[in-house]
Image 1 (spheres, chains in turn cyan, blue, green):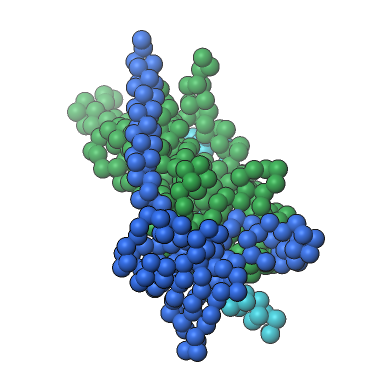
Image 2: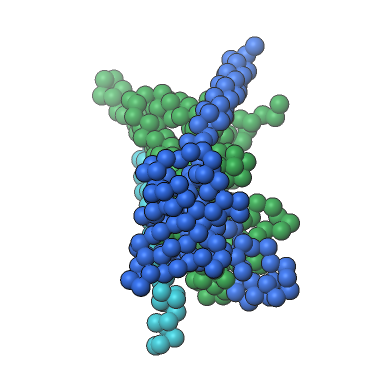
Length: 64
Length: 147
Length: 255
């Protein structure tokens, strides 16, 4: 455990380094999740409307 | 001339004018955009006692004296042509050491004595592992400011 | 002149982006762990900054990508303003939040790096201040885009803002070197490919992280653009159905 603690302490600057990485991860993951969610929502909305329209639902590119 | 062409030229013209205007403004305010003065400028530009400024330079070798209270330090700040004595009370940044570039913020209390209330350490754009720095110093290829 | 409209066709874009997107996202998902491993475990501490140098691996690529995003956004806005491409405004609008996030990461990690090394969270020097302005430009673009009832007006106003703000990008990039503005921020380490002033053992993690950021940027840009195209199609489908419904209500179909 000592090795681990020493590693996380990063020579005393651990709190700066880990908070920097945490902020970067939160922002990048947050934006990615939000973008993918809204994309999925739009796509299913589009497919439903297409079906109502009588046409076969097409996702345009064969992508799942 | 088609509408597209006209829009293109208008846009390019506006960008050129805007860039020129910005360049002129920056040129005019350059002295104010400078983040700190060098000791030479402080000595020659007639900075008045009591005027709040930032001054940047190197901490002279063998000039750092720490008082017994453990908080107050005195050192000489130099740009290799002029030197100004600095006194500071507080916590020093971890990169502060002799030979290192620093920026001090505060005021002169005599023409060659500066009272700092904040010290920021500058560092250069060189990054390398300690062993490499050690090897460079040994082989005499060291180009950095501090030994 | 090449027929640019050929590439600006939304159907073509959907097909093309559908092909590129899986690859870009796979590259991003694979390079981030490798970059993190190199940055946090497999790279040495700096001779002077010791461990805090590890913040560089997320800070510097974020700064690069922030400037790159802004350049792309300005170029797309210019194309939209001059040639009125259907996809250009959409591209610029999709880049804005991604660029804002890169700039935010650059600012926050820079602050967390500045405190232990310089001894201050923030200074109003030319470099730091101009990155803050860059962040405001991204946010201002997004706000302005949605501020008008007429979406084309919003797009035009926001596009003009971005192009006007574009004069800042070279200032940010070169404020330290060319204008010789004295700043607290150091100069660029990787400005020349021949001899960057970052040691090899630290350059690799930096470049892998930069690749990860770039792949992330491409993936998100494509996802967001596809999303916007689908939204437009949903709108037009809704409109068509509403028209048909009202027509049916007025003129009942005969048996």
